[in-house]
Structures are given as structure tokens and as C-alpha cells.
Length: 203
Image (cartoon, rainbow, N blue to C red; front, side):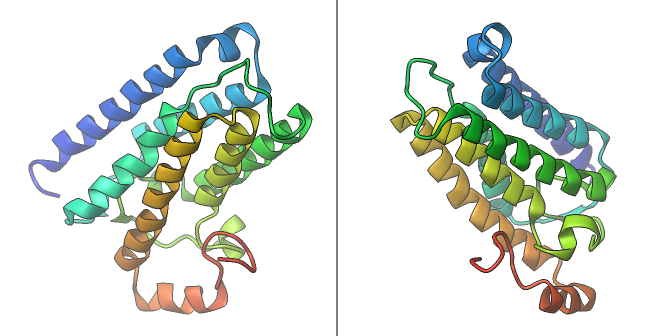
């Protein structure tokens, strides 16, 4: 670990907290007044990310600035969405809520498998192959995808569409960076068994 790593770690945690606070500020009414289920779960996901970021253990992070950039943008951009109550959802609210619930449960199960190995920047903190990692290589990101799709279906604005499309462009690049960082003989053996990166039978 270099001498600047602790500063980078603290800066990253502060940035995540700051963007999380922005999300709460921008979505105060749907979360705390009307208690919209999807908006509340979206906030809960952000709080889980903050918690696991704070308690994670140090690891050998990627030295490439591009990996840092896509990780930061892929994580924090997703919190720039805004729940706009007057916009009609594209699916019934109960379906959006069910999709969001499935997303947060999937990402939580992945976080519980990772525990202190959870991180935002691509890093080598050990390979996890249990739980949802038996089915797909990146279940936490799959959970994020379900959650964010539910939010977009609930609040289909141009702003939210642009934010989440950008987020997932960054996430795909982030997946590539993480797999490159973890590419060991153990990882190669596991990846041959678990072929699907994000969506079974599709990707």
C-alpha cells in the first residue's frame, strides 16, 4: 500500500457520502414524505454501498487511472437520478417495486458474500465463488441493473434515462477492468464454469 492510498480511500468514502446526501436531498419527498417503495429501496441501496465501503479491507487496487474513472463514474453517477412523482410509470407500481426488491436482495446477497472484500475501485481482495457467484460473475452489478431499471420504469424521464445509460456504459467498462485485475489461474478455472457475466443466457 502506498503512502497516498489512505488519502485516496478517505476521499472515495467522502465522495460516496456526499453524492448519497445529494440523492437524499433531490429525492426527499418521494423517500421521506410519500414513502415511494422504489425510491426508498434505491436510497437503501446507496446506504448499503456506503456501509460496505466504510468497513472494507484494503486491497491491491488497480494502478490505471481509467479503471478509477469508470469505477467512480459507474458508482456515483447512478445517484444523480431524480424521482419525479408527476411522471406516469411505464409499468404498474407493484411490478416496479417487485423488480427493485429483487435487485436489492441480489446485490445484498453479493455484498454479504464479499463482506470486507467489497470495493468500488477494481482491486484484488480475493476471489469469491459462493452464493450468487455460482451463477453469474457479477451478481452485485446485476442487482444494480434490476434496481436501476425499476427506478427508470417508475420515473421514465429524459434525465434519468441519460444518467442510467451513462452509468451502465461505465459499469460495462468497470466489469472489464475488474476481470482483468482478477485474472489468475483460479479465476480462469472459475470463469470457465460460470460463463455468464451479468445476465444468464444473454451476457
